Image (tube, rainbow over all chains, first blue to last red; front, side, top):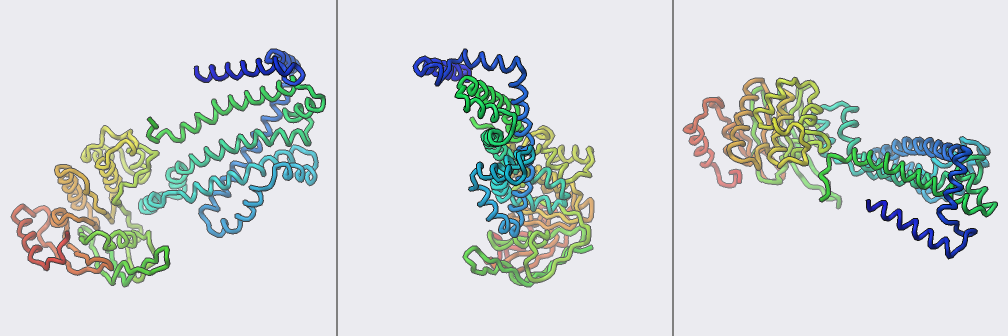
Length: 245
Length: 238
């Protein structure tokens, strides 16, 4: 209910601002809705959204799995931490744009280059978060598992993983928002489809309704995925925690 | 089949780099069916000694030999349960081979039946300690290590758990090592009492109790207590 109210407020402010700014700079909600409906009817909207979502999914899975494994390794093995740390700092501070441009130059304007570039941007934050999580593992529970001769897999699955779950969730959360942002840049620079490509086209034509149509649909999709997928998974992984009052 | 402990020393280096001697030369051994009790002042190094015996700490001088493939049941000072698993899962995860009957029996004895599906965060400390006991017993261990298992339990329950420990020890030839502050627990359960000095810990006195556990009535216990009181005051547990 409160969410609906805040959404209505957003629409109201937009509409009022549109009246002042004029249709060329800020089209009113119905004007944008018209474009969305038209694009959806032609199928273009779904094509571009689908292409973007596929890239997000691939890059996200790639970065999360690789980043989690590396972070766990760096948290457990001192040598790995020392070797990996300079690379981590470099990657963390490298602007996304540099990675994307270099990827396109080295690997061509290909799908592989785009997905790799997005994944590389997200990778270091996943590594850092999981490394922290691994360092924070409770050694007393590890000792318990050792004394009771729990197998390695059993220990990992039931002792280690539940402790890492909040960190994985945090990495996924922040990582997903990062990927949402970067994927559009990658598409704008070197892909012939996707929401980023469409926004690029709209920008060149100064077609604000089209730009807003794609941006807002994209934002809506992000919101839906966050509420229907990410939040329930997060709640599930922490259901054993006593609830905050 | 013996647990032999022969430690010649253990030093601990703190964050500032200073070395602290935790254990002085110290040796004892336990046979199956025997209950050894470690009694000593707080902070004397008992926990370090247990960690060495359990193989968790390998940086010490000396030798500890456990029978190969000995199953170990342990009750830590804090319950050390997995907060994200239920009471039943906690026991089953540590002891995959436990039968449903044995589990039901343990839960009945320890009065945990109604808490099977609860998470440790929903339990009082006393209940959590009972779960830790159930987990250690479920192993049917060859070596049972109990680090103050009855602390913070009410007298009735502590008494019943003491009986349960005695039953378990009597049923199978378990080598049991009990750390306690309670002289009462010590003389009711122990076959041999090891009194430890303040840090660095060494055994200052070893008291065997020759009367079998089952035949220790109140009269015998009172006699043992009097004998122990006759010892020099500084060697008494606090």
